[in-house]
Image (cartoon, rainbow, N blue to C red; front, side, top):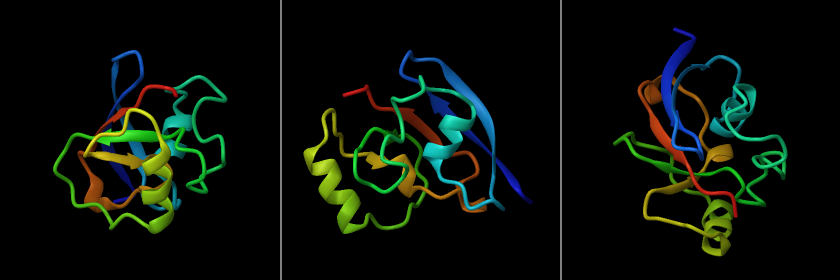
Length: 109
């Protein structure tokens, strides 16, 4: 299997069910950008280096995600609109285990 289905609620509240490849080492932020689910220049500003929090999202499904890195934790500590289920999309790499993942993009800060 090389594609999984994930659900992404954009910043306008619209739910999108999209295909995400698991064989291209893509992360959630790159999936959002490839489907143009956020205006250009508002997500992934740092290029996926966990340095800007523009790709912050809320994980609404019970998927087991990799432990948060120190860089991701530090970035979220300085971000706006952080919730208990906040993660940086650039740090969530697409794997078969994430089939059915449901996320919501955090408001633009």
